[in-house]
Length: 294
Length: 237
Image (cartoon, helix red, strand yellow):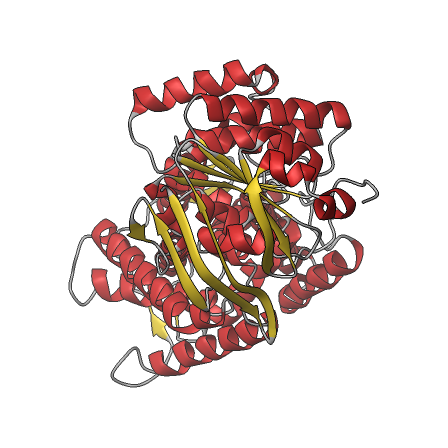
């Protein structure tokens, strides 16, 4: 029993990191109906910036976390401005292909020696790991930090979207760009802001990922990003609660597969979920089946 | 003169939607643009709100040219556009929709006053304030769309087919409301297919046919015109 509960804890840790990434996919999809394939790579940049922050420049890790968040927000905004905005009202496939291009660019540019380099880097944790053993279940302070950080930022996000004027503007833009303009909403700025928030959350996810799984490299965002994307689809793409729910499920499924089936099967199961969801319920768990509006 | 449209040209690709139309709206008036489907009525309103690109001509509001402004700036000048199809934000509540109408304002007390005002005018919206916009009936959505337009406290209200899809009783009610909004000091540019009703509330009208203004004048004169009667009022000339 203790082993099973231990797996749930491990799955929760993974799911929480996925949630931070999945939110960015779903927010961007919600507002411009684009799968931002470069999002996983923004997450990777977050992991590196955080790592360099608390190792090379020896900043306290919460400061490094904020710097990673801001850097990623800036990259997200820049990416939208340079790559997606010129194609916003072009055929969807153009923007999608550009997103894949942006993704490759970030991966290979960051792999250059004078950026992050192409090698795996072992993360030296900026804090001493404390482990508590409760009824045979190991819980670490890193896991507690991850949980608290995710809960705090999810709460802030929820307040932003449902309690502020900016949040109302975001929801209006995600419904209809022209209607938003008629009410005086600057659609471009609102989209930039959405990218900033989504990418900032991915940056936080990157830093926390480095804490939890202390080995990072420049292609980290490919698989992790894809799984977070699957999580967003599973929960219902475009829906914020869906991203969190999907991510928590993905975390559990992956860890349970690794623990009880085979650790080699974990990626296969993730993609099997994507295929099954797309076949059976393409709108996701929380989504309603609606004909696609173009 | 509040609004002046001069030689407006709009193309969609190779198709010319507007052939240099000109018209004006004076302060305090209800002016209607009538015409059949595809005549260019909606395009005209969308051009004023800068949702469409304009290929020629000029639009002047309160003496200032507004031709090259971005869409989100137009409403700040005092032009509120209630669009075709109402564009109610389905996943926002009725109250949130109304508050979005006041997005450009920051005077809390004034916004509250406008909200009370809208609720007095449309008691139905007050009853349904907490409901999602998407769950309203067609008539309620039209009331919400007009209410939301009023929340910006506009000098000029652009209404695009407010009667569309409504039952005759509701159409009467909506036009009655339009008339009262005007009497309280808001100038209105009304686009309608329902020429009969439009010419009853409007002071003046323009008849639009395939992107050209073919006739204009006081409503009473248009109502008496044989061509208008034949083409738009369903009477035999």
